[in-house]
Length: 441
Image 1: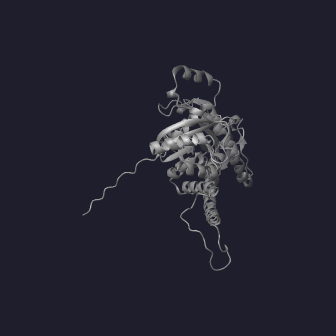
Image 2 (image 1 turned 180 degrees about the vertical axis):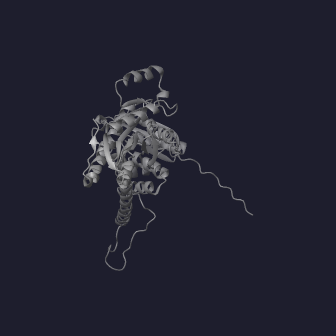
Image 3 (image 1 turned 90 degrees about the vertical axis):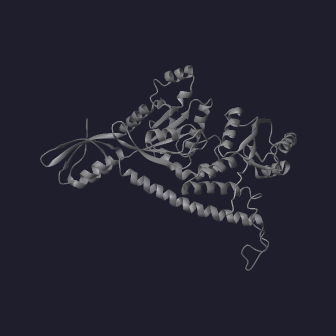
């Protein structure tokens, strides 16, 4: 019997650069952006040998960096045998190709790096489809360096494609066909999700969606509240595939808690569009919970990035809505003075709650706040329903929160709380009996 020994592959050695462009609109500090880029690289187990901030007045159209910077990088790559250059910015296809030629190494930009992480983390069929769509959309603009395994077409029988169809034309056609196929599959996913949402609307289970910057602690809070075992680690984009679990509020009312993909500054447009089917869960949620890492020095800028993505999804001025709650998470990492500041700051702001997924601080208060917001959107009713109308009574238990019932001679008097939408449905249901629910004074 022959023994085989597998030698572990050496980790990819990477150089991470954040180009600090003088007229850039990026709000995060250069040091924070570099640290974030390194965190993205570590998320897919790259070995970061060097990292630096390079100040640029202008961007060179052909190679992004000037010749001086490129010559210095060439020496570093030759001396340290590096495998990969990561530029934490958007590179054009020509800039990427020219940098690879001059440095004789692989070069990727911020979008490609995030796509690599998503490609590695997606587990469900839906997640994989969305990542593949984002990859193809990104690759379509970079046909100068993609799909090199295909041979040039030399023509053939018939006239479709024509003799001498170029490689780039064939590549574009292949990618377009794949994009069409994936979009059709994702449309089926979207329809399935809509059916699931419609089914949830038939039962009194409101949806509470967790959103926030990546690595803010959403999944840790989700696990604490639902006793689930969702992957939660100190990594950027630890969660990609959305997860929904039932939770019990203090009064016993049931709700559904949804954990979503984390946002990030300069989130590639391809990803926002591709993950729209997933993020539609946020749009339909009764309560949106923004989990923030207040131990991060850029927490306010991260908040702006999250609100910007929510606005792109169609949720404008969400911060001013009653159904918006902010969890100021990782309070256990704050110095005592800063912690005291936040405690004073939130005293008269009921929608701000100081929490810690590590020591469970504030989670009970959060559940009480969720219940208060849900109750504020309900109507309290007194309803008399004939004893013989079992279907209506069953409907009431399924679609409202029955708080009290009293058996009379030929009917049951119910006191219940019900959403405005279900109240309208109930009124239609009771019309044929000449009955109408009466709002409790």
